Image (cartoon, rainbow, N blue to C red; front, side, top):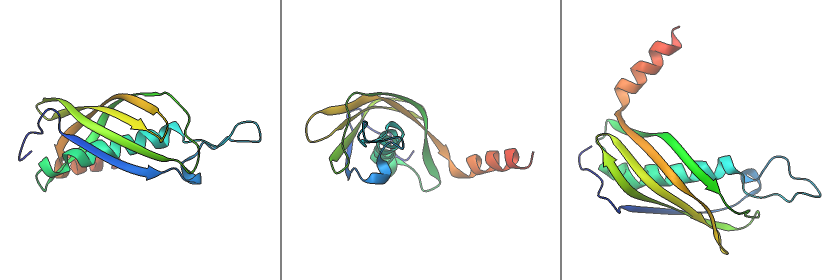
Amino acid sequence: MKDTPKIGTLGQQEFRVEKQHGIGFADDELPAVLSTPTLIGFLEQTARETIAHFLEPDEASLGIIVEIEHLAPTPIGSTVTCTARVVFVEGNIVSFQVEARDETERIARGLHKRSVLAKSRFARRVAQKSRK
């Protein structure tokens, strides 16, 4: 990392919940709502983008821990705001407090950790596994 992210560094993004973001098992009795895997993906993306400008060109951050409570349903068509706040940095591990809200309430909260690594080293490791 060219700079260490400061505790409190905050990132945010909004997205509109579309049909492809919904649960795949909705029916007449169970309305389509934002799926947990999709929500986690947006929270991870928010954290990744929060620290992107701290990284060297040959570095990337990859998610290593996700502990999320999905607290409330969000219908298709709603707008969700995801936030990621840096709460701890130790070596190459950056920890975030993450949260998501729709227009009505907090819908998720939790902890997310990302590891900063050299892209070339990671690519070599993947290539070695691919050869087996």
